[in-house]
Image (cartoon, rainbow over all chains, first blue to last red; front, side, top):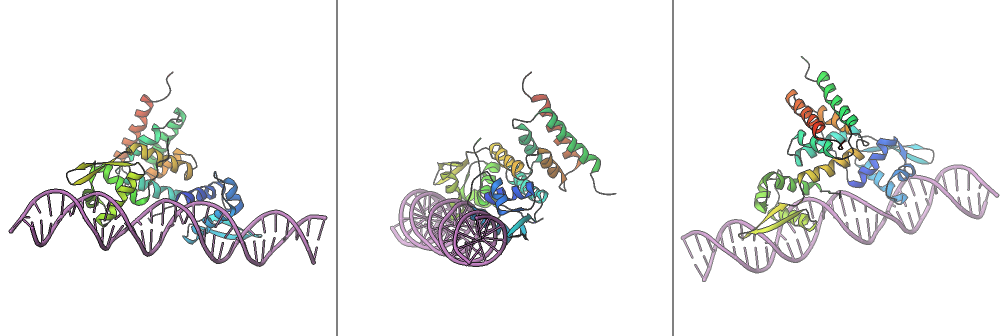
Length: 127
Length: 127
DNA sequence: CAGCTCCTACTAGATGTTTCGTAGAAGGTG
DNA sequence: CACCTTCTACGAAACATCTAGTAGGAGCTG
């Protein structure tokens, strides 16, 4: 239950690793929305490695970086922080904002209901 | 749809203003989990004011600070960032993590379902 | 009024974040 | 082999964040 916190730029880079899997500096750089210098991306990856959030192995001449922190863990940590600090502990309030945004159609609402229903059937502490 | 971003400490302070309403420095300070110097809290509030996230009015000798950014707006912004960067755009994945945490009982699940159902009756583009 | 308390304003150091340049190694191509 | 590209390592400047100290004003209290 440690606190996992990423800075803005670190999160951009982690997003690439989660999406694309283990990647070289050049591959990460190509996927980023902002165009940054090669060494800038390298520095961010090295910072993340120093913090223990990613690791790397050699791949030919280059290094291939992989996330050590799973999406789920990062997401749980970020969500917990938001629920507490912004929504005053209320998951309902959070969910309201989540579905209040535009660009959510009936099909997606239905899928969200499925998530809650599956949680019921799977849930609970073991007897 | 501007980007609203708070640093860790700024978020702590905003949380107090959202929870307690307009507050003086001393009132904010008393509510914070960490014990910080009076001037530290003042500095954070002034930074937030410089960024346009809070404002203040005189209240006797002291200043009373109030949030200019609504919870909802901050929440939408933060959630959008998390959905995009961590959950790859999938609200379902986010919801899964939200309800996967411990400490969520059947009553709360039911309330979350209500949120989704209310959204159906109120929502959608007009036919 | 002298002193105490509470307040803002200003200042400032330590640390973290972001960005990139330069140096030099490694490997393929003429 | 000399050259070009690609890569890592190191350094560093600019800026943001976090924390708090000092100075001085305003008001209450004896």
